[in-house]
Image (cartoon, rainbow over all chains, first blue to last red; front, side, top):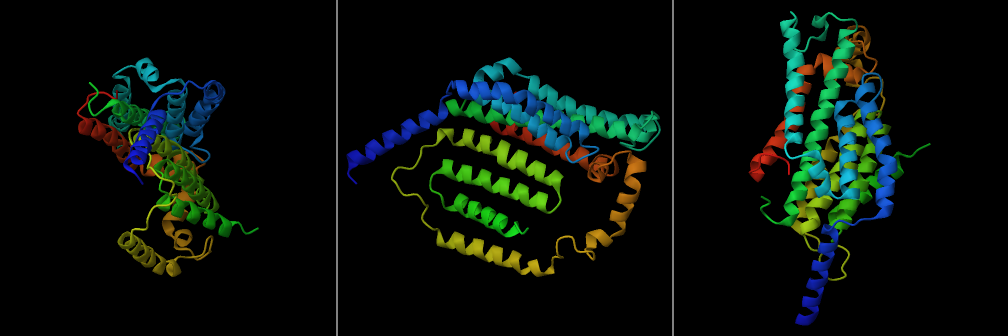
Length: 163
Length: 176
């Protein structure tokens, strides 16, 4: 292979990389995401709330809710989505989710039971509701962490530093 | 109906494709199909909770994250479809598979009645008591969030730490 051909191939490769990087405003993708995302979001919530009675749970539901954010990012651009979410929202939500999980556990100790001993709360079906609330917070933690990873990895595309 | 063999062939073929394809984009897509196949394997093994996780995380989220990651790379020039074989790496992989395969004979058949999981006291305790003690119909969830709630708190903290660890590595305070 001659040097010229090599250079051509390199230029071509760089072009494909540009294509991969740049956001494509595709009406097909946008329309599909617009239609599909509410259903995916509902399915994620369903898995979180219904994980107690059928397969599913906070981890799976959280990942599927995060998928909605990934779809929105791919369809409408990641930078506008990041602006819409706000700079520090995700960090606050992740930390809040963990804090709420711990608070439920400590609350049971305060109410006179063991750590995460839901029946200590003394409400009807305490264990069932306790499990469901905990699953919901797990979902919040997982969904916001994955969305955060998505944003953080994307932020690296414009160069090493993004400040 | 025996669909296990075609399913295993599909999983193996997509795994090999992931390893040998030269274009990273093609390898990522092959990896997503591999995850999809594994998710179906979990459903065949009657573990729908794990199957859901594999389908959502393996075939869904990691694929998107990988695609974002390779956005800064360039595609290899030339028309060659497959990667050159790395003989030492292949040797290690074959050896590792051989060691794992040697343990296959010790595994019980799927759904065998004398399976140690089925005969175990703990399994019977959970199946008998989970509903009236934890009040939920899915025993897996009862074990995860009630009996082993503390472990699950640990898992949630692991996810949290993954996010914090990434921020520490990147030297940032927010995901942006």
